[in-house]
Image (cartoon, rainbow, N blue to C red; front, side, top):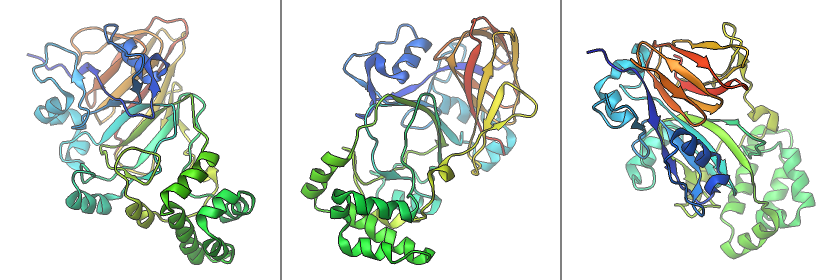
Length: 364
């Protein structure tokens, strides 16, 4: 009996408090698009859609010809689906976790550990750090999206210390003066920046809350695609009801000031396929492709890659055929498809606006 190697998934939803509520959430809309019988609750936040095989959100397989019920179980039985290099490099595990985020209010002040720190934190506090993997992340905006990442150039921080008295009150005059005196000395600037940030983060709660009420503007109406190593390790230090670990966060950061442009990762047009834009970060765990097939292109072939991949349809309709699927699959907004390594998928585009998709894979 031939194996089914391309199949649709029903993916896990995380109802974190910061998520958009009900059908205001892109996550909820995609869930409903992928399953018309899904029940979306009006007052409930739908923050993240997890597409992958992480134990906290292992995707369900939507194909009754397959004996295994989850993607993680299926990969454990058929590790060759990952591709030989990926299987060997990542010990038979799917190395990435693909997500959609629908953000209603500010996420936590957070950072993600590298492999060494992740192993140490998991060994010491497994209840707070659920695995020993690192968690490099990449976000791709679906709508207008504002994010805060890293530290601004020292000159900009000094400007805010001068012009925002509430900020200076949290940091304190001594640390602010040290930062001002560090100009031109990278090592000294990092130490001074660490002192400023730590002072702010360990400030007495009442003082902090009073200043925060004046300074924190809630972030609204934002959605993005995210891809990361298959981990749920996050070190948090505020703006969250979850476990807070200020000391670890303040110690683990590298305090490298840089302009915002340095945090933006440029995509590259695929030389062999004009429909594909590639986001290939400097980590081995994952790559993301944005695929837009115009309506004028009635047929499109999803090229095979030497890696398992997960495909999410964001917009449009198509019918998909693949020798590895053994039957046609209907693609519409919200459809999530697992594609085994080295398998291609032929799509017949049926919508007048074409089809827009995102594909996560691991290109070693």
